[in-house]
Length: 380
Image (cartoon, rainbow, N blue to C red; front, side, top):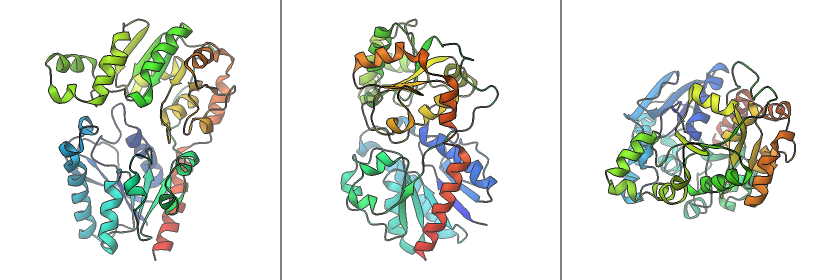
């Protein structure tokens, strides 16, 4: 039996309570790996509840609030986590493969361990241009390799990184339980943005687009790791200097919050479980007016799986996931996005669900099993 240590990192529990793209992917992948006969050791935070064979928890609680703080304030978090992962790998001999999801620090530490660590495969969840100094020079020595989450992500990667990539494995989300999803043919009332609130995700654009289209807007996602609107109000009122300096908080206060009136535009904070399901199934469309080249976009797959069309900008993976005029619309101007949002009644829920059926958890797990085998063979 193959034993894989899946390193989810120190930022959020697995599964996350609300927002958590990487952690949602891990929570989707691990049960399928175990169903296919893999023994899984999960390195995560102590509040994780996913059923696994073994749990390794270097840090007791999630540190997502700190993820975008200045490096000199928070660099120790990822390194503290990886220090204990490395110690665990040195202690035992039964781990065959490490499947890493911790940006930069994961592959750097694993490569430095040489043959005292098992071969490692890192899934690349982020924009690969932001760490050019690392990815243009990193050498995994054939023992640390990479998997992209979309072809467009890999095409934008530095040549050095592409040479060490083993393939592309599209992200999957769990199949919706219960009803087929969507509104049973009825058009929902609100547009939904399901993402952490930051300039790259374009919530300010979403506000203007929804107003121009005359469609109510619901924003769901955390601000600087804070998912409760009441908590954010209290902490801002208290004048927490570190919080006020956070770029996502400045973006929220200056560009988004002035438009949140509780009626035309609502912010509901982090959502998960039944609340998230209700918001998705009752949405007119998922609105993704991103400003960056999104590599994976699990929220898009979640929406399509529920029969909900997607309206977004044609960046990153979106042209691969959204077929213009069939499962949603893509436009590169705010006026174009507003026109698309008004026109989503033409999109059929069954076409959206059929598109999402291409990205199943089992398919993702089987693709990774193939990559684990190839990695072990290549590493000797």
